Image (cartoon, rainbow, N blue to C red):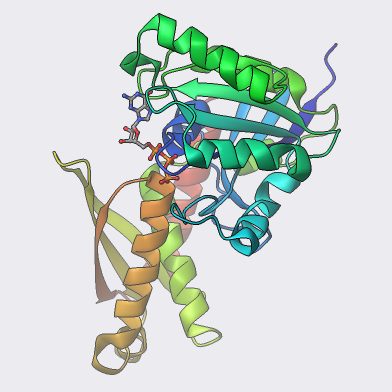
Length: 304
Ligand SMILES: Nc1nc2c(ncn2[C@@H]2O[C@H](COP(=O)(O)OP(=O)(O)OP(=O)(O)O)[C@@H](O)[C@H]2O)c(=O)[nH]1
């Protein structure tokens, strides 16, 4: 009864189906610190959601059906790998678009690409955009086309049906220990995650040169009316010489880092980001950082 459950959940669907919106809703504020650390493994982890004793790890299937005109077989095969490891696969469809060519292609591939152990469900999204008759007919047609274990009608944006879907998925992931310890999925303010992303890109770019001698802080986060956000970050280094290294020849290092971090943040948030990086020399940041960490720790423990 109190057995823990944990598993991988893949949301698949055509671009724009609402996968990011749904993930964000299900994961909520609990964005995962592992998100950007586990990316090098096969599937990219979008977030970890908890429901009761269940841990659901949402994996991304990047660019699954992007080639809209001609579905290049090799490309689709590669993209399916994210879904292949998932315990639960949720196909997301846009209600108002119905069974498009792309949706049909995914359904055709489902039988071949999924194994008997995998649970495949259907989520018809954007139900706010259609009449109920249309929805019922679509549900029927889709379930004739494929034997989905369960069908959900949702509006990821408005939140309708999302809780039902989440609770159901929680019961479908296999019994077993959690995949990520709870302290790794503690609430992390988005600012910290964004800073961590930039720090990681710097570390990757600079290799051994100064991995732990710099720190990144998000100073300002502004939500813009057009849906994008503006993020200002400061990179603190200990010496003038380090500043030069971080900037690189004609600023090329900082430019590359900024681009990589921005792209990752955009993908994570599912929207446009304007990222501004500034390098500052602050000889004592290491000690300050320790205090900061301590505060961060207290912040998390503060719930108790
Ligand atoms: N009307 C309506 N719009 C929605 C709903 N869910 C998502 N959207 C919108 O659909 C668009 C695409 O949503 P995303 O979540 O970015 O879709 P995605 O599947 O992650 O897209 P890719 O990243 O291109 O694969 C956004 O403009 C959302 O605001 C919904 O329930 N109703």
